[in-house]
Amino acid sequence: MTGVYLISDNIITPLGFSTRDNATNMLADKTGIRLTENIKIAPGPFYASLIDTSQLQEKFAGLDDPSDFTRFEQMALFSVHTALSTANIDVEDPKTLFILSTTKGNIDMLEKENEQKFGKERVYLWHTARLIQRYFGFRNEPVIISNACISGVQAILTGARFIQAGLYENVVINGTDIITEFVLSGFSAFKSVSNGPCRPFDRTRDGLSLGEGSGTLILSKNPPPENRHFLVGAGISSNDANHISGPSRTGEGLFYAIDHVMKKSPVRVDYISSHGTATLYNDEMESIAITRAGLQSVPVNSFKGYWGHTLGAAGIIESIMCIYSLRENVLMNTKGFHDPGVTNPVAVIDRVIHKEISNCLKIASGFGGCNVALLFHKQ
Image (cartoon, rainbow, N blue to C red; front, side):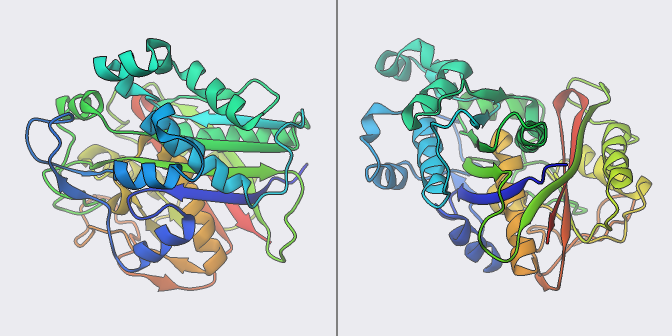
């Protein structure tokens, strides 16, 4: 089977505009989650991880005129540009594909002032994906993955399958989402937003923190020139159709996905990157699925305490940080976690650990009972 190699990446969050900057700040135990006041998003203060608009515009001005593009578009375009700058691929080659992962896209176009400035068609995901495609000159029509919170990991899995099937040689995948009044009020209606920075797997957890982010990951059938190679291994998405928003109490769909990957791969799992939203039911469900799969002693962490839940970007930027962990042989702690708070005791990482690791299992779950598991490994 054709190997699928990760040849370039970029992460944009409040912790930095590069993967290295994000990792450095995370290892220093910094978080992008802040108590914020923005009347365009909420009438009172709220905790979230938001990218500074003036800093974004300053960075983007080196690429193009910020006034011609929305915040979402600036984030996505800058991230893709940065990743492409270190990847030796031809975007105009018919064997190169672009995939966009997002749950909401230009959701701020629902606001009248933005609609009047940019046009109402800008709110459509197909329009956004095509704008990015044309900006860089991708020849093929873009593919959009918008499947709740597993969108990012599913986009990577989809891109890998395109390469393995011989349909494309290179796939550029971007995941981006922004936070608006529509997004925050929706999660608040579920009573799933924390009153402070989120605390994944902790006994005192009371909900998630929302965040903004953009990440780009480039896959190729051709290995990069460096000595260590990082590959996408076995993966699968599943749907247990348990509930429109609530996760399965038995972890059925996620267990199925993890079990399938374990049976397809001969390697042991050194490390698990969980979805870890810090909601009562998600963390409990993940601990059940991990335990049912016999992986309760494998180190597991959540990155949500650093960035918040970045929705369609989450699976991309968290997978990139998984690869960073493999590259640097470091396991990052689960920020916000102190006391175990799930009924199935899993090995939540509570401090930075430096050790040799060869592979990582990335898992995610989302509304509607969707789940995904994907293995990354190095050689």
